[in-house]
Image 1: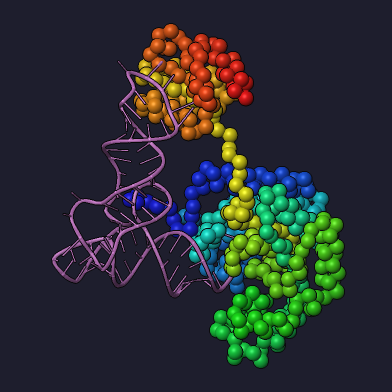
Image 2: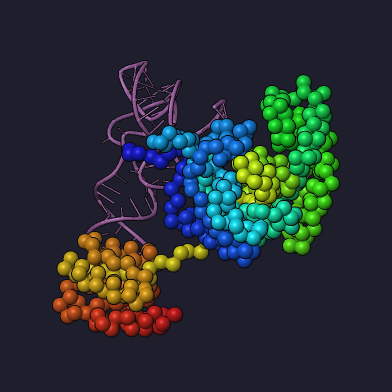
Length: 421
RNA sequence: GUGGCUAUAGCUCAGUUGGUUAGAGUGCCAGGUUGUGGCCCUGGAGGUCGAGGGUUCAAGUCCCUCUAGCCACCCCA
């Protein structure tokens, strides 16, 4: 195709898919509202530092996936790759900080990551998420999971499993990290380059490894949950108890770690059986009690999740068709254009969805368009109608056609529609 | 960022060992029906065969580069 094509990894949201994504957001927001969450919207770009400090400068997201640019004032800005850091920033920079805690917030919008596009993976993608700030009660972890889980159910997504783990906090995670290092140390030689590198940079990530050599080692590797300190352990148990109260089944997964630095204690993902391998994660989340301080604010615990809407929609049953115009007003004669427009406007004032077709295509083509678009009725204005000051109204399902004066047209439509029911 | 597969009409795809003016279905426009849709028939428009370069008498077909999509890694939603 000649012309300018869209940038790699972006997509035009055509009406059908856009409707599906908007539906997912609408359902999610309404559900979150039932739990007391209120929607907020933060800027699409932020200071680069927000993500470098918040997400972590050892992560791939920050290292090689950010859309960073300098504005004309020399500021380094970044298109947001995720929503949690922004939400925490907005909390501290607004009157939200004055509210009684915890504060429950929800958001949805585009996110940007420069990575390799593929099915269900885009450089500009969309997320829906919720965050709870200001309280570290484990029951809130379960609440966030419950919102996420019920949301998927309401959308009709099947075939999912909730993967749950606790990765400990600042007290016990270092001990676990060391245990991992000690465990893998003697096996370094037989591990491949990639896994060795991983172990060096971010030891917990070794658990994500899919290499066969490592896999056999993984079974016997130290488990996060065996190293939790007392506080983390009892918190995790309360999460499990609360999940039972919500009636949500989970799968304990000691290998589940998260890619962003700010997570602590509870981590979870929802996987789907149809999303293979690396893209099976439908959404993820967890607790991030240290994030606020990483950003330079006072300590403020938090927990949340974010879901990729493109992936969720990919797995949702198709939406029923959007409401379409049921009445078409067609000119069968060029001079009828004015009457066609006036008639269409009259009907719209009566609350009907109406498409006006005053153009110069053949009547046959216009009728076919109306029929294919799902119209019930066609109002026709041609030479004869023009002269007599009337409109011909035709019911497409059976071809019944009547003549109507302009000022009585609404009742004509009504009677044709009720009879056809 | 690495490797593999792919790219032909708006859409879904054919195109035989390189060989005349590149096809089908569908969609679009028009006509058959001198103003009336669905089914049927006829005709038309629409392609620099993803882009650029190369080999050859000759390239949609073979080679190289680039771009884009998909898959597997990496990573994440």
